[in-house]
Length: 457
Image (cartoon, rainbow, N blue to C red):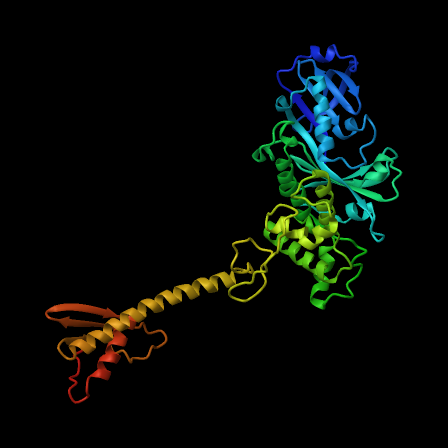
């Protein structure tokens, strides 16, 4: 769960640490990165204790950096399960060093889970090698002390997404392989809106649940995954998809700068549908389910049942992402279809009514609504005309300005049909379709022997 922390202690008296026999401070000069990732030299007094560094800078600031997980394990490795209650206990132990939780300001921290792999056809390498693209992020390889590849990390200005072999990194003797998936918040501006600024905030179970749903799970959903072993060739694919598949499985193709965000997202959706239909397994969905199951265990909350079988029955695999519900709640994803063409649009926004393909369906529906309004208005006008002719008969004078039966000729501008009806000395005008309808109805109701030709000016 929460691991590497970097906290600044406001209103803190360094004398508390100086008088603590557990902390032996040494003067050190170290290279660190500033906010713009530039290397700067810093001088400070540092005391190391059970995986944490207690730091007093020359400017008078007091900081605590390091693995809170290792601190809980008395300086041991951080490859085992670290539950919410374990984390709270470790944070409370920091109180013995004078750390006040609401005055311990977070500068950065890691939020992730150790996921045991029980599947025979998968390894830790399968998971981190399957990430082929993350939008707008710099990809870097991770290595252990012996410079062997153990994972991948994707870096932005504010966050770093890491996926790596925890068993190899921590030199564990576990029988199962373990993949670590974590999100490091290098700056706090992204999660201030979640109300997380201090060490006290991340001891709030509800805020951690929200952080898991809105940040950690979302980071998986935003990534493009492809496991070569699940779909090694194009034999199963229809001909029209084979060429697309060759592009989709190529990480360089996704990085083309000419591709718009909308086009990339459309291809991502099509690619994931192809994987779900034809691949032996969907490694992205497997990772999501593992994260949900493991978080259900470590958070120790009734909203997150630890029974894996119950979770599968409840369908929490995608419910927390699609509907935004709490993980562990019973969720049923209701399929949606375009109101115009009938195409499935479940993957689109919750308020979507039409598919997004070149806006054809949306425009067609809009034009249909406009047409219906015009038709309703025209029907009302026609009803008015019929009632007028029925009530007054021939008791009014009618002037026709054009011939309504005149055929349109190419290149010859047509004249609008207009009529002027005089009723009780008052004139009423009808134009276009209304005028033509009036004339047709008038001629139907008027007998030919009583009909006098209408003068044309």
